[in-house]
Length: 157
Image (cartoon, rainbow, N blue to C red; front, side, top):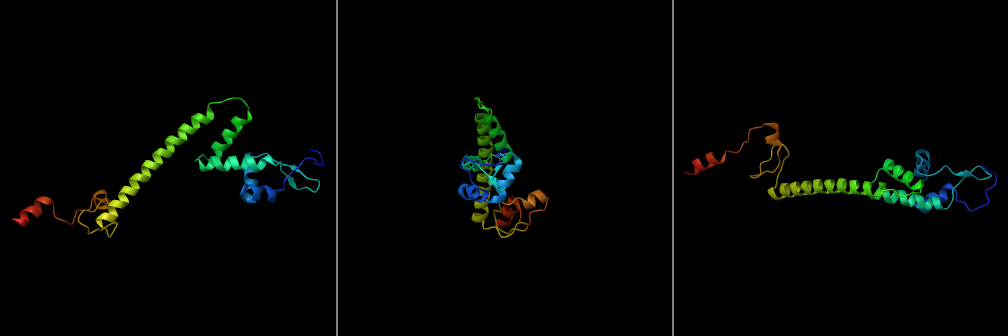
């Protein structure tokens, strides 16, 4: 490494601020190999090239799309090879399927919670609402304290 850096560079705080990350995140990404270890200024400070800010933005955008840091690292490595690869397309399709499965699960949770609210459930384990959608009693093998339909109809006679 040359002792003198002549091209423009950014110090750690400048990169972190411009990229919207904290300094610990910047150093962590450096340790993980997501960003290259920077050169040092004559005073020993880290001297990042300005494009580091862009790379950090790409990393954060990939994370917002649901990619883990490990997946991001692999995608960045594929991109550094500078030849076309279907890797991003394949991974994006897999990630989309994963996200769609999570959304389906969240829809099921939303529907179950809506049923709990509509039924006016009052307890997770001993609900007294007439049409309790909570499966606790069934799953735990607890006998239903409410009479069966045939018992109810016999009582009405």
